Image (cartoon, rainbow, N blue to C red; front, side):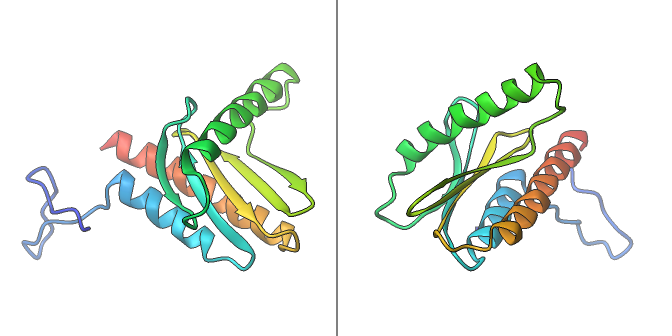
Length: 145
């Protein structure tokens, strides 16, 4: 679903309104790019209080239950980093026999990925870090507009 230009969009020399994607669209695109990585089963972005912003999960994955898991873990990581004077929490991972959960902190909430056991951990971690940076930029840019 494309956002239509609004009257507040600036006009360039061509007379056409410029089109900036909405925050919601940028969040969906960021998540979609991550779930396309090899070994990533799905993902979601949740607010610190567990509300789902967007998700890309297989039908058998319980979205609300995963959000209820991701939000407190992300919040605990933020608080722990602060208590330990480690700076801002950026990314973390939790491994189990059947896969790994990655969590990245952003101004909007937590970007959470569910992966296969044999996923390229470093590749996903790097991609998650770039995605967190993108979410921060989207939040900052849209907030300044």
